[in-house]
Image (cartoon, rainbow, N blue to C red):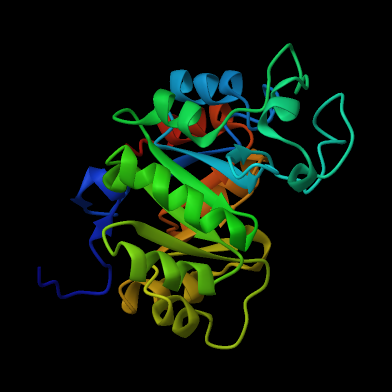
Length: 253
C-alpha cells in the first residue's frame, strides 16, 4: 500500500487502515482502572461497555508458565495476597481476591472478552512473557486482534521476527534522542509516550515517519482536551468514560 502526505494511514490490528483525521482512539488502561479493580475481567467488561476502541492490560508469568494479567511484580498492592508473581503457581494466583471478588485473569480469559470486539493491547512486563503470549495469540488466531507493547523494546523486534502480522508499539517515559529511530528499528507501528512530554512537533515528526502516536495515562479532562487538540492518534486513560464524553462534546468520532 502506498501513501503520500504528512499523516500516515492508521494500522489498527484487525481494524485495518483508517484515516487518523479527527479520530482519536480510546484505550482503556488496565480495563477501566479508575472505575473497577485494575486488570480484572470486571474492569475489561466495563471498558468494553463504555465503548473503548482498545483495552490495555499487563502480562507477567506465573511460576508454572502461564501468562497472567497483573501490573506489579508482586501481588501485594492489587490483591489480598503476598509474594512475587513469578513465585506463585496459577492455582495460587487464582485463589487471590483482586478486588470486588474478582480474580487475576489469564491472557486467554481476557481474549474471551475482547476478541472480535475491541483491540487488546498487551504490555509485556518481563521478557519471559514473550513466548507464552505469542503461543496464546497463535493458538487463538488472534494476530489481528492484538497490539503488543513494552518498555523493553528488543522484545518488539522478537515479536516481529516470530510473527510480523502482530502489530507492536514501543512505550517511553521520556523523549529520548531520536526516539522514533528506535521505534522503527524494532519494526513497531506505534510510539506511546507519557503525555507530559508531548508537543505538536513530536507528533508531527512521528506522522512524517509513518508512525502512529499514542499517549498515556491521561485522566484529567483538560489534559485530554489538549492531547486531542495536539493531534494524537490514541489516548490511554483510567477513565474512559470521561474521555468518551469529551470526544463526543468535541464532535470527534
